[in-house]
Amino acid sequence: MSKAAEVLLQEQLQDWDLAKDNYAALAEVKTKDFSFGDFTIRVQFNPARIQSSAAKVDTKSIQERKCFLCPQNLPEEQKNIPFNQEYEVLVNPYPIFPKHFTIPTYTHTDQLVLHRFSDMLDLTQTFDGYVIFYNGPKCGASAPDHAHFQAGSKGFLPLEKDMKTIRKEILSVEENLNVYTLKDYLRNGFLIESKDKNKAVGYFEKLYSKIEIKEGEKEPMLNILSWYEEGSWFTCIFPREKHRPSCYFAEGEDNILISPGSVDLGGVFITPVEKDFNKINKDDIIAILKEICISDKKFNEIIEKLKSIEL
Image (cartoon, rainbow, N blue to C red; front, top):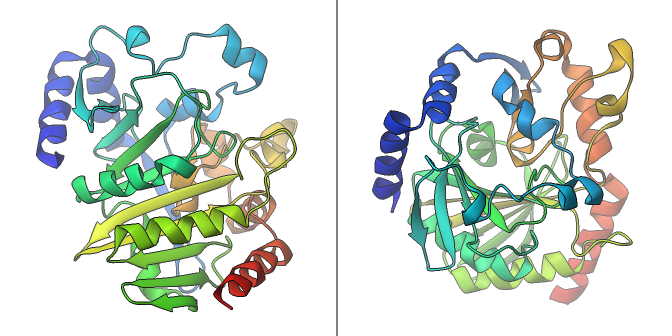
């Protein structure tokens, strides 16, 4: 499937001018790195991503536009390959990664992950050269009304390397399953490492059940990133507090147009406006992550609930 996807990408780069131009533009993307001791966060200036970062995802706006992930609304040039009969693999025409795909369902159904997490792990194993990620409806998804995952080239996100080097604390251990909490990482989160897909799914469902669902919402706010390596699934889950930080809505010099999703929590902050790329600093990154991710207090409450299940 990875090879089929790469063939699709090459065909689209030849036949679809929008994709060809935006992938070529990646060569000109600017980046800068900030060190936080045991890990680094990269900031990318990527003007093509203004479509996603500035997307209107309020109910009224969504109702008034055609869903751009429904098959009947795709551009004529956009081709697909099927996955597991329910999903189609599409080249993302506004890439962040050198190889970037969107994987929506054929049918128009809400972006909810609980009963699709097993599908996510299947994708992770099948697309073993990629990180598969999920943005919740108010956690970076520009199509919160249509179920989808995304796939991006392995080796691009600092997160993959970080999971081998940062400080973690063990939360649960059983045969073929280790669960960790991430410590001193600016974003509170969990790492599920498993050689058994069913055990990974089972633990995810436990974790999901302990995360607050805000009033009026259908699922907890969260971002998920998963990859497959040497026979194991690695899955990071980041519960969220807010959709967008206050700097997104600020006026004048205080404004930074950043709408964090899984890629940002994976260690690559996307800034589609050059002035924001030039001015963003370590303090801004810390403030943004502290604002959008759950607090230490809420994180510890989830941990204690999970420990009580173990007992």
